Length: 196
Image 1 (cartoon, rainbow, N blue to C red):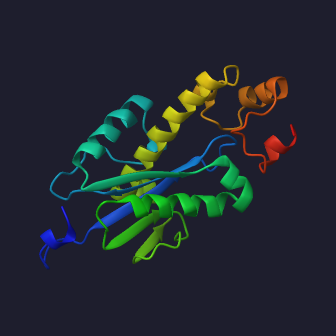
Image 2 (image 1 turned 90 degrees about the horizontal axis):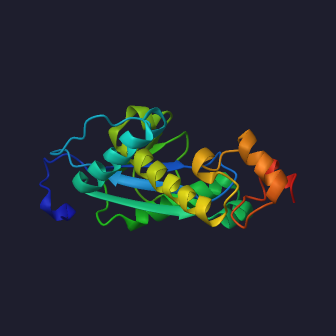
């Protein structure tokens, strides 16, 4: 469906954009952009961190099935090291927006800054718990990144990536001390620098 299918008095199309993985010390930062269908509301949308893994997975499938449009994108650990996490987050968000098959009229982005997308929009602090479109984006990004951590867990056994999802937990840091860095670790992050 294109914007041409909407009449002048139809609701404006809003894309919610959010990311997951800024605080992790391994792997990419993953962003999602979602345009929900006002005719197909999805119950239970909220900040992905407030949901169980099972509930997130169910909601992610519902979002993909019912949204007007959605897209996922990423910035790799090497990009994060090169341009810093904030800029890499904005890159991932711009990539997700660019992949939307429908262009929205307005964007709502979780956080306090817009990522430099050529579309009217606003930054919403705590938006992942307040704005349905941002909640949906946060859920898609979280499910996608968590599944990637499960893949890394199989590629690099001994780090428990599936358990801590890349955050700098005691288990993760002790694994770094024991096994050293993987190519996926963010070398610009303080907890990682100690093991270089």
